[in-house]
Image 1: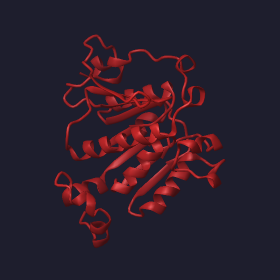
Image 2: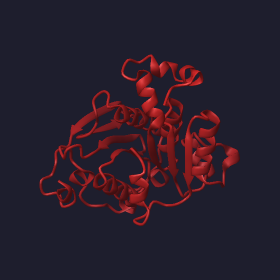
Image 3: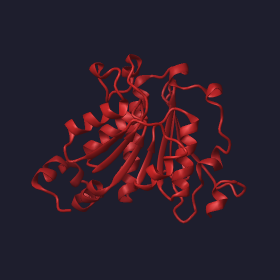
Length: 253
């Protein structure tokens, strides 16, 4: 697709970057991204992906907006309380950038729908807050050879990683986390608390990694996990190896 004059003006700061340029911007506008969760992580992801010009964004979240969400879920507003998060996020996208085709799905990710959701997109973003959804998304993305950019936050700490097969040289999610823990044992933002800006920080990193994966630029996070502790200003990048005994990904190698 050729860029219009309005496209050239709106995305001029992207196009000035030699790694993106006009060709890269056209590719972004053609791309399809699925965002799972429109909460603390999903909010900044959706905001920045729509601003940068990712042309097709699907948002799935079955939760409704509560007052306590607004401390960190910045895509929503007070007057949206009680409505579905996915609808609120889609409304924001429509106002910010009319170039974007956005679909909101007010459903929970399930065994029945996960593969069809994943297959229709180029990159998957996991901003969910429970292990059931994380494992469903991770397994489906690897099985269907789709790129997954996943993050998680709690208290002052967060992590981000990219998962992809890419000629089977990278580990899968279960190589690092083979067994699904119980949510009650680990907790989430509702039970543990979270500093609101942490979601903005990790979500912005997720959006950046999505753009890099779509365009094939820079150094991928695949095969690594970045850990952040904002309270103590600590950052670690840890290499993840393929587990030759992994019962999941060995089926697809």
